[in-house]
Amino acid sequence: IKEKTPILGICLGMQLLTKHSEEGDVEGLGWIDGETKKFSFEKEKLKIPHVGWNTVERKKNSLLFKEIPEETPFYFTHSYHVTCKNKKNIAGTTRYGYEFVSAVKKGNIYGTQFHPEKSHKIGINIIKNFLELR
Image 1: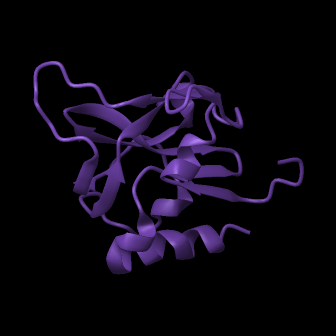
Image 2: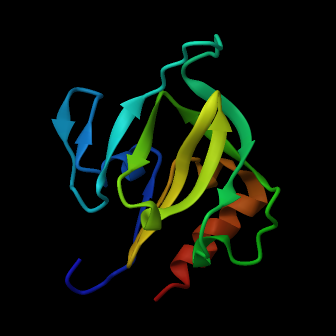
């Protein structure tokens, strides 16, 4: 953190960046001011875990998404999602029953709820973009 080395948390790795997780009721690293919460659907009966392809609506410019079209689908598989107290940390959101944070960025810290490594060629571009950050 002090050296500003880029860090990328993927799925659970992104959730670990928050201050607290409902999964196991445990503390996280606290690098992102937020919490990890389990999906909860009152009106819709959607399956948990959320598994499948969804797009990410960009909320701020992030070099992770450099040269990746806005409507590109990414692969998700998760039962928990991140909430951010500081909206400036939200790099992208996705809708599954309701809008949830699917990408974060704070300084040298990046996170994706989706799995770039399972998102075919476009996901490899996310990893490539991350590797070029430094």
